[in-house]
Amino acid sequence: MNPLTARTGSHLAGRSLALATGALAALLISLPAPAADAATKRPSTASKNASKSPARSIKPRRRVRPAAGQSSARPVPVPEASDAATARAYRKDAARHLYSLNLGSIYQGRMPPLLYAIGVLQVHVDGQGRVGTISWMRAPSHAPEVMRQIERLVRAAEPFPPPARVGGLIYTDTWLWHKSGKWQLDTLTEGQD
Image (cartoon, rainbow, N blue to C red; front, side):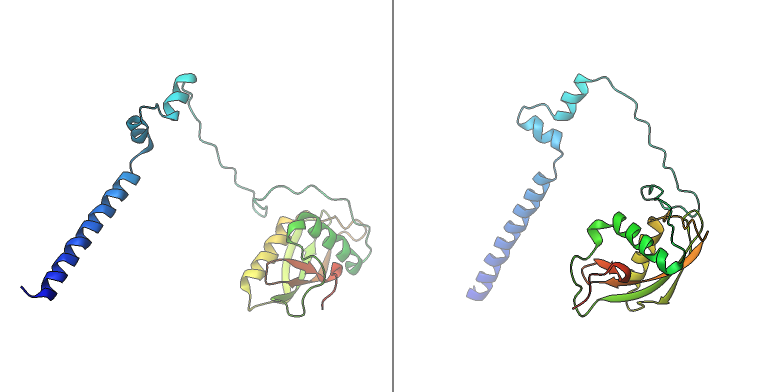
């Protein structure tokens, strides 16, 4: 017999044994938990809990869908009315409102010189603080995920402070977006290096 053929044959036999051992290990790992408990002579926790409490029928939870135009996120309490007389003055109240609802997303400190995205957004707010149309004056089109996220943040922050003195308005703010996903609004920015 050729030594090369003998070595190849023994190599294949060793490989077959390794595959069989691996398959056996996978089979043992996939055993259900109650069978493993039975092998060690311990009752499973499911059977312990079943014997302590009577069986109850579990009703499936009914999923409540938000009405049209409402967000499925947690409800935002109605903030105090804004006494701003102009859209420019209202911008600070809107920015503070957005910051208060997204404290973990705000970039702390001065922004770096190069940002991932910068977008200028116009938001229509009616007399009750509800968000109407949202339109981009300068869209960060290279980062569509940022555009969607900003729009979600604005919609989720509804209701905004109701603009009591002017009834409804369209305000504009610039979003400064860092590559980490944290952001600042130009109205309340801490500056940029």
